[in-house]
Image 1 (tube, rainbow, N blue to C red):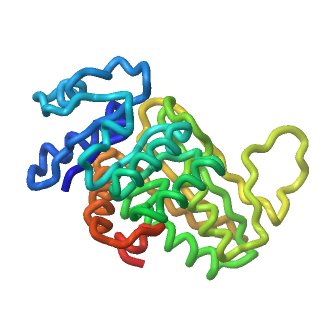
Image 2: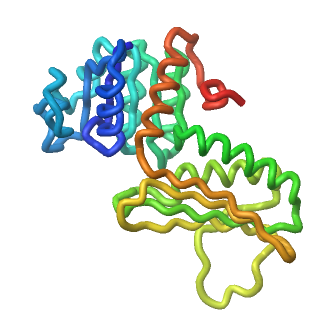
Length: 263
Protein backbone atom coordinates (compact mmCIF):
# COMPACT_ATOMS: atom_id res chain seq x y z
CA UNK A 1 0.00 0.00 0.00
CA UNK A 2 1.44 3.33 -1.11
CA UNK A 3 0.64 6.28 1.15
CA UNK A 4 0.81 10.04 0.72
CA UNK A 5 0.64 12.19 3.84
CA UNK A 6 -0.83 15.69 3.87
CA UNK A 7 0.11 17.58 7.01
CA UNK A 8 3.18 15.36 6.99
CA UNK A 9 5.24 17.65 9.23
CA UNK A 10 2.67 18.01 12.01
CA UNK A 11 2.02 16.01 15.17
CA UNK A 12 -0.04 13.35 13.41
CA UNK A 13 2.36 13.23 10.49
CA UNK A 14 5.12 12.44 12.95
CA UNK A 15 3.01 9.73 14.60
CA UNK A 16 2.25 8.11 11.25
CA UNK A 17 5.89 8.17 10.15
CA UNK A 18 7.05 6.64 13.45
CA UNK A 19 4.41 3.91 13.38
CA UNK A 20 5.04 2.96 9.77
CA UNK A 21 8.79 2.79 10.32
CA UNK A 22 8.33 0.64 13.43
CA UNK A 23 5.92 -1.77 11.75
CA UNK A 24 7.75 -2.13 8.45
CA UNK A 25 5.87 -4.38 6.04
CA UNK A 26 4.42 -3.44 2.68
CA UNK A 27 3.00 -0.03 3.62
CA UNK A 28 5.30 2.67 2.30
CA UNK A 29 5.16 6.46 2.17
CA UNK A 30 5.56 7.71 -1.39
CA UNK A 31 4.60 11.37 -0.94
CA UNK A 32 4.48 14.10 1.70
CA UNK A 33 2.95 17.57 1.62
CA UNK A 34 2.98 20.55 3.97
CA UNK A 35 1.60 24.08 3.92
CA UNK A 36 3.36 26.56 1.62
CA UNK A 37 5.99 28.41 3.60
CA UNK A 38 6.67 25.50 5.96
CA UNK A 39 10.39 25.30 6.78
CA UNK A 40 10.37 21.54 6.06
CA UNK A 41 9.57 21.95 2.36
CA UNK A 42 12.38 20.57 0.23
CA UNK A 43 13.73 18.39 3.06
CA UNK A 44 13.57 14.62 3.47
CA UNK A 45 10.54 13.54 5.54
CA UNK A 46 12.59 11.21 7.73
CA UNK A 47 15.09 13.92 8.58
CA UNK A 48 12.25 16.35 9.37
CA UNK A 49 11.05 13.90 12.04
CA UNK A 50 14.52 13.21 13.40
CA UNK A 51 15.09 9.78 11.87
CA UNK A 52 16.99 8.29 8.96
CA UNK A 53 16.28 9.64 5.45
CA UNK A 54 13.29 8.07 3.72
CA UNK A 55 13.82 9.26 0.16
CA UNK A 56 10.57 11.27 0.31
CA UNK A 57 10.87 15.04 -0.05
CA UNK A 58 8.26 17.26 1.61
CA UNK A 59 6.44 19.32 -1.04
CA UNK A 60 4.07 22.25 -1.03
CA UNK A 61 2.29 21.11 -4.20
CA UNK A 62 -0.37 18.64 -3.14
CA UNK A 63 -1.04 17.29 -6.63
CA UNK A 64 2.62 16.31 -7.01
CA UNK A 65 2.84 14.83 -3.51
CA UNK A 66 -0.02 12.36 -4.07
CA UNK A 67 1.22 10.99 -7.40
CA UNK A 68 1.47 7.21 -7.25
CA UNK A 69 -0.41 6.91 -3.96
CA UNK A 70 -3.11 4.33 -3.25
CA UNK A 71 -4.18 6.24 -0.13
CA UNK A 72 -3.98 9.90 0.89
CA UNK A 73 -4.08 10.53 4.65
CA UNK A 74 -4.80 14.10 5.72
CA UNK A 75 -4.29 15.58 9.17
CA UNK A 76 -3.88 19.29 8.52
CA UNK A 77 -5.99 22.42 8.48
CA UNK A 78 -9.59 22.86 7.33
CA UNK A 79 -8.59 25.53 4.83
CA UNK A 80 -6.49 22.99 2.91
CA UNK A 81 -8.96 20.13 2.78
CA UNK A 82 -10.72 21.12 -0.44
CA UNK A 83 -7.50 21.00 -2.46
CA UNK A 84 -6.38 17.72 -0.88
CA UNK A 85 -9.71 15.99 -1.47
CA UNK A 86 -9.67 17.04 -5.12
CA UNK A 87 -6.09 15.82 -5.54
CA UNK A 88 -6.93 12.43 -4.00
CA UNK A 89 -9.95 12.04 -6.27
CA UNK A 90 -7.90 12.89 -9.38
CA UNK A 91 -5.27 10.35 -8.32
CA UNK A 92 -7.93 7.70 -7.70
CA UNK A 93 -6.66 7.25 -4.14
CA UNK A 94 -8.62 6.41 -1.01
CA UNK A 95 -8.99 9.60 1.02
CA UNK A 96 -8.72 9.44 4.82
CA UNK A 97 -9.01 12.68 6.80
CA UNK A 98 -9.00 13.54 10.48
CA UNK A 99 -8.86 17.30 9.95
CA UNK A 100 -11.44 19.07 12.12
CA UNK A 101 -13.17 22.45 12.12
CA UNK A 102 -14.65 21.87 8.67
CA UNK A 103 -17.01 24.36 7.06
CA UNK A 104 -19.65 23.74 4.37
CA UNK A 105 -17.15 24.02 1.50
CA UNK A 106 -14.85 21.36 2.96
CA UNK A 107 -17.78 19.07 3.73
CA UNK A 108 -18.98 19.45 0.14
CA UNK A 109 -15.47 18.60 -1.09
CA UNK A 110 -15.61 15.29 0.82
CA UNK A 111 -18.92 14.46 -0.86
CA UNK A 112 -17.53 15.41 -4.28
CA UNK A 113 -14.45 13.20 -3.81
CA UNK A 114 -16.67 10.31 -2.68
CA UNK A 115 -18.18 10.17 -6.17
CA UNK A 116 -14.78 8.99 -7.42
CA UNK A 117 -13.00 7.28 -4.50
CA UNK A 118 -13.67 5.82 -1.05
CA UNK A 119 -13.69 8.64 1.54
CA UNK A 120 -13.62 8.42 5.31
CA UNK A 121 -13.61 11.54 7.46
CA UNK A 122 -13.68 11.21 11.24
CA UNK A 123 -12.82 13.66 14.02
CA UNK A 124 -11.04 10.92 15.96
CA UNK A 125 -9.64 7.56 14.80
CA UNK A 126 -9.38 6.05 18.29
CA UNK A 127 -11.20 2.76 18.80
CA UNK A 128 -11.70 3.83 22.43
CA UNK A 129 -13.55 6.97 21.33
CA UNK A 130 -15.61 4.85 18.95
CA UNK A 131 -16.72 2.63 21.83
CA UNK A 132 -17.23 5.64 24.10
CA UNK A 133 -19.59 7.19 21.55
CA UNK A 134 -21.73 4.06 21.57
CA UNK A 135 -21.77 3.99 25.38
CA UNK A 136 -22.73 7.66 25.56
CA UNK A 137 -25.66 7.18 23.22
CA UNK A 138 -26.89 4.18 25.24
CA UNK A 139 -26.56 6.11 28.51
CA UNK A 140 -28.51 9.04 27.10
CA UNK A 141 -31.28 6.66 25.99
CA UNK A 142 -31.46 4.81 29.30
CA UNK A 143 -31.12 7.77 31.67
CA UNK A 144 -33.54 10.03 29.85
CA UNK A 145 -34.58 13.59 30.61
CA UNK A 146 -34.08 13.36 34.39
CA UNK A 147 -30.30 13.61 33.80
CA UNK A 148 -28.54 16.75 32.61
CA UNK A 149 -25.71 16.26 30.11
CA UNK A 150 -22.50 18.32 29.86
CA UNK A 151 -19.28 17.72 27.90
CA UNK A 152 -15.76 18.93 28.66
CA UNK A 153 -12.76 18.47 26.38
CA UNK A 154 -9.09 19.30 27.04
CA UNK A 155 -6.39 19.70 24.38
CA UNK A 156 -2.88 21.11 23.98
CA UNK A 157 -2.42 24.86 23.63
CA UNK A 158 -1.70 24.60 19.90
CA UNK A 159 -5.10 23.20 18.87
CA UNK A 160 -6.73 25.60 16.42
CA UNK A 161 -10.44 24.72 16.65
CA UNK A 162 -12.85 24.56 19.58
CA UNK A 163 -14.76 22.63 20.67
CA UNK A 164 -12.95 19.60 19.31
CA UNK A 165 -14.51 17.59 16.53
CA UNK A 166 -14.62 14.63 18.88
CA UNK A 167 -16.58 16.60 21.48
CA UNK A 168 -19.12 17.58 18.85
CA UNK A 169 -19.37 13.97 17.71
CA UNK A 170 -20.15 12.92 21.28
CA UNK A 171 -22.71 15.72 21.52
CA UNK A 172 -24.39 14.39 18.37
CA UNK A 173 -24.53 10.91 19.92
CA UNK A 174 -26.38 12.38 22.90
CA UNK A 175 -28.72 14.25 20.58
CA UNK A 176 -29.59 11.01 18.79
CA UNK A 177 -31.28 9.96 22.01
CA UNK A 178 -32.16 13.39 23.42
CA UNK A 179 -33.19 15.50 20.45
CA UNK A 180 -34.36 18.35 22.68
CA UNK A 181 -30.80 19.16 23.79
CA UNK A 182 -28.96 22.02 22.08
CA UNK A 183 -25.23 22.67 22.58
CA UNK A 184 -24.05 25.89 24.20
CA UNK A 185 -20.39 26.87 24.48
CA UNK A 186 -20.03 28.89 27.64
CA UNK A 187 -21.80 30.58 30.53
CA UNK A 188 -21.15 33.99 32.03
CA UNK A 189 -22.93 36.48 34.24
CA UNK A 190 -26.32 36.23 35.89
CA UNK A 191 -27.72 33.53 33.63
CA UNK A 192 -30.35 32.09 35.96
CA UNK A 193 -31.06 28.38 36.46
CA UNK A 194 -29.80 25.90 33.91
CA UNK A 195 -32.30 25.31 31.12
CA UNK A 196 -33.46 21.73 30.60
CA UNK A 197 -32.65 22.05 26.88
CA UNK A 198 -28.97 22.99 27.45
CA UNK A 199 -25.99 20.76 26.83
CA UNK A 200 -22.77 22.68 27.45
CA UNK A 201 -19.79 21.65 25.31
CA UNK A 202 -16.77 23.30 26.92
CA UNK A 203 -13.17 23.53 25.69
CA UNK A 204 -10.04 23.74 27.86
CA UNK A 205 -6.65 24.48 26.27
CA UNK A 206 -3.18 24.13 27.74
CA UNK A 207 0.11 22.29 27.89
CA UNK A 208 0.71 19.28 25.67
CA UNK A 209 -2.51 17.35 26.32
CA UNK A 210 -3.18 14.97 23.41
CA UNK A 211 -6.91 14.91 24.11
CA UNK A 212 -9.26 14.27 27.04
CA UNK A 213 -13.05 14.03 26.67
CA UNK A 214 -15.54 13.64 29.49
CA UNK A 215 -19.32 13.34 29.18
CA UNK A 216 -21.16 14.08 32.43
CA UNK A 217 -24.63 12.70 33.12
CA UNK A 218 -25.89 14.53 36.22
CA UNK A 219 -29.08 13.30 37.84
CA UNK A 220 -30.90 13.57 41.16
CA UNK A 221 -28.60 12.15 43.82
CA UNK A 222 -26.14 10.52 41.40
CA UNK A 223 -24.01 11.13 38.34
CA UNK A 224 -22.12 9.16 35.72
CA UNK A 225 -18.92 10.34 34.04
CA UNK A 226 -17.57 8.76 30.86
CA UNK A 227 -13.96 9.75 30.19
CA UNK A 228 -11.47 8.95 27.46
CA UNK A 229 -7.87 10.13 27.83
CA UNK A 230 -5.48 9.93 24.91
CA UNK A 231 -1.88 9.61 26.05
CA UNK A 232 -0.30 9.16 22.62
CA UNK A 233 -1.15 10.02 19.02
CA UNK A 234 -0.02 6.56 18.02
CA UNK A 235 -3.51 5.14 18.61
CA UNK A 236 -4.92 7.75 16.19
CA UNK A 237 -2.30 6.78 13.62
CA UNK A 238 -3.18 3.09 14.08
CA UNK A 239 -6.84 3.84 13.47
CA UNK A 240 -6.12 5.86 10.33
CA UNK A 241 -3.94 3.08 8.92
CA UNK A 242 -6.59 0.49 9.74
CA UNK A 243 -9.13 2.64 7.87
CA UNK A 244 -6.76 2.90 4.90
CA UNK A 245 -6.28 -0.88 4.73
CA UNK A 246 -10.01 -1.44 5.06
CA UNK A 247 -11.00 0.90 2.22
CA UNK A 248 -8.45 0.01 -0.45
CA UNK A 249 -10.30 -1.79 -3.21
CA UNK A 250 -13.78 -0.68 -2.13
CA UNK A 251 -16.16 1.20 -4.37
CA UNK A 252 -16.40 5.02 -4.18
CA UNK A 253 -18.54 6.52 -1.42
CA UNK A 254 -18.57 8.00 2.07
CA UNK A 255 -17.60 5.49 4.74
CA UNK A 256 -17.77 5.58 8.54
CA UNK A 257 -15.73 4.14 11.38
CA UNK A 258 -18.52 1.61 11.97
CA UNK A 259 -17.37 -0.01 8.73
CA UNK A 260 -13.75 -0.05 9.94
CA UNK A 261 -14.05 -0.91 13.65
CA UNK A 262 -17.44 -2.62 13.49
CA UNK A 263 -20.77 -1.21 14.66
